[in-house]
Length: 174
Image 1 (cartoon, helix red, strand yellow):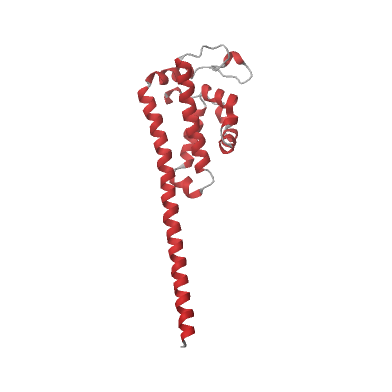
Image 2 (image 1 turned 135 degrees about the vertical axis):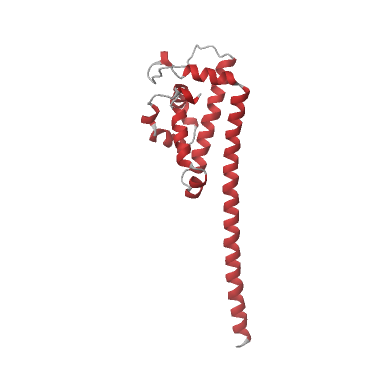
């Protein structure tokens, strides 16, 4: 074997090793980013749990309001209406609902379409959980009134479950 053949062979071996190292680095980085996303979403869920524990009155309000008959076309059935006192309770309820809707938006935006992330995060179960929660009349009202502020993936998700949102809400969720 001549020197140039040795150089070509060594170059090929180095290239293959570099390709393997690059692929290995990619896989490690992707897995790390995947876990980072899942941890971030889990942290957001813990924030909502913390709010639930710190403000148990919100759960009572949501429980009582779950019997509300909400019709998009009938303002008399709306909670967030013009003229309603904007007191502390009003803002607490709206902020809590926004927090949960933002988490749902983030889950759908981050997870949907990434098969590995969907499996890791158990997205099918999360879609079921979100569907049951979003049946609450106050969630439905906010989605109908202000749905354009959430991302396109979340809005497509809401449209895909629109018929299910009209099913009765399970009060025992609160």
